[in-house]
Image 1 (spheres, rainbow, N blue to C red):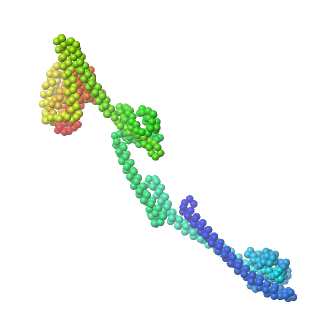
Image 2 (image 1 turned 90 degrees about the horizontal axis):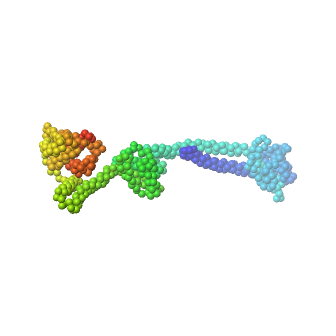
Image 3 (image 1 turned 45 degrees about the vertical axis):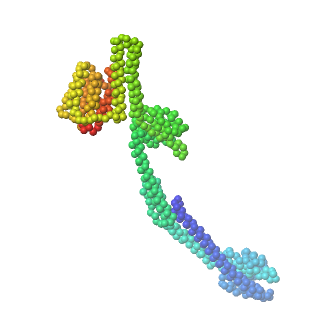
Length: 587
C-alpha cells in the first residue's frame, strides 16, 4: 500500500465493492418486497373469499355446518391454509385438520386482526414441523364489531429459498466483480504507474549527476506531457550544467594561471578556493588553515578580522613572507543574507619594493655624492675668502682641490645624464663592423700605462680566428675601458689582469680576469646597481662615482648583449661581455 499502484487497486476495489453492495442490496430488497407483496395479495384474496363465502354466507342456524364444510374443503391453492377464529382468538374451524383439537393462534397477526385491523406479517412464522409460513389476519365485522377473524398462512419455503438464492447470487457476483476489478485495476494501475516509476528512476539518476536521462513517451495524456516535460528539463539541465562546468573550468584555468594569488574564505573562515600562485607566494603546499589562522600565521593581526566583520569594505595590508614582500587586498563579499565571506588577493611586490628602496637609496646616494664635493668646495672657498688668498701657495692648493671636486661633480652629472638618456631611449648607437681582435689589442695597448703605474701586469691573449660584431666602437671602448679601470682599481700592486676573446653559440665573448680583491657572493647580484659599492669608503677614496658598471650594463643591453661576473673573495674577478655576432640575437 506504499505505492500508488496498490492504492489505485484498493481504491478501485473499494469503489466496485461499494457499488455492488449498494446495488445488490437494492435488488435484494426490491425482490423481497415484490415476493412479499405477491404473498400478501394471495393471502388477502383468500381471507376475503373465506369471509364472504363462509363466515358471512351462513346464518346462525347453518353457520356450524358451514364451518364443518370449510374445514373439509382444505386450501384452494394447496399452499394456503386457513382458520376461522372467534373474537377471543379460539379456533372455530381450520383447514389444517378436520378434527379437534384445533391449533390455537396467538401471534401478532391474530392480535392485530382481533383489534379490527387486517395484518400481514413479513416475518416468517415457523410451526412445529419447522416449515416457514407467512400469515395474514383479516377481521370479519358484524354490526361494526369484530366478530370473527380469518387467519390465513402460506408455506413460504419457496419464497425464502428464492430470496436466499438471490442473496447468494449477489454475493457471488460481488466476489466475481471484485476479482475482475482487482485484475483489471492492477493492469490499469500498472500501465498508469509504469511511466511514473520510470520517471522516478530517471529522476534519481539525474540527482546522482547522470544528466543524459530520458524517458519514453507512451501517450499524449497528462502522463505523456509529464514525460515530455521531464525530457525537456533533463536536456535543459544538462545544457545548463555543461555551461556552468565550462564557465567553472574557465574560471579555474584563469584563477590558476593568474600571477596574483587568490584565496577565498567562507563566513566560517574555511578555505573555499585558492590558486597555485597564492601557495607559491605564501611558501606553503596546502591551504589547511582558517581565516583567523591565516591572519595570525602571517602576522596580520586578528583585529583585522573584527574590522572586516564590523566594516565590510576592502582593506589592504603589506607583509613579509621570507624574502617576499606581499600586498593582500581583503574584499568581503555579501549575499542576500548578509556577509558570506572574504576574498584575499595577494600581489608579490618584492621587485617593486626593491625598486622603491633602490630609488630612495639612489636619491640618498646622489645627494651624498654631491654633498661631499659641494661641502669641500664651499669649505675651501670660504677659507680663501677669509684670507687664504693672500698666500699664493695655499690659494693654489685650495683652488686645485676645488677644481678636482668640480671635476668629480662634473663626472657624476655626466654619468647621471648618460644613464638618464639610456632610460629614456635617447641613446642612438652608431653601429658598424668591429673586429674584436684588433679592437681589444689596441685597447689593451692603450691601458698598459695604467697597469704599469700600479706595477700590475696587463696581458692580451689573441684569438686564433677573427670575431666580427656589429657595435658602436665608442660605446664598446667605454665598456672595455670601464671594466679594465675597475680591474686596475680593485687589484693591488703586482696583480695580473688578462684579456682574451672566445666565440661560442653565435656570441663573441670578451673575458677580463684579474687577481684582485674579489667580490663577496652576496654582493654579486648588486654590483650593477647604481651607486652600489662593495667597499664604499675605499671606492670613494679611489674617485669612483658608483655608476660605471650600471652604464656598462645599459650599453651591453643596448647591443642586445649582457655582462656576467664570476668572482671569489680574495682570489679575483672575471667579467664576461657577451656580444651577438649577427647583431640581433639576444641572450
